[in-house]
Length: 162
Figure: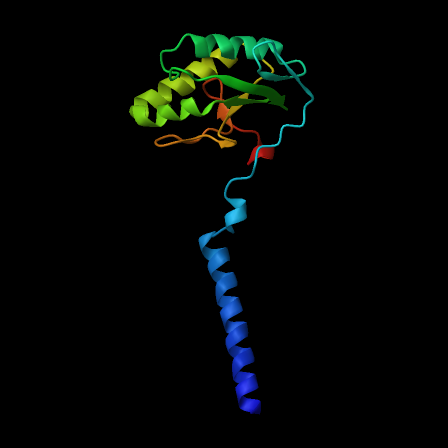
């Protein structure tokens, strides 16, 4: 009986160590760490068109509204839902119609991203952009997650964001 107890303990320890090693070696993350929910803590007010705008971001909202209304690379029917500034990152939330960008290939995604970045590039206080669609960071089929996207060429994320 004593041998069985020792054998079970050894197998349990070996299994736990093997699991730990696999997580460390291959960078496997638990499912809860895949996509954290965006947290916007700035006080917001609702504009006349229903857009939630963080304090001090009215000019950003106006510029993004203009980019969306121009159409072109932004899918028809897309609406700006909210906009905030977290440090030097502009957090933009768009309606689910924006996801249509994924059906436009690499060029369509790039053009949409460039349109939003160009709209924000005029503001020195904005360095990067994060786009939220359907409550999560937008993930392009070809371009990956739109979080920490530099609004001007040559800029990268700060070391705090890495």
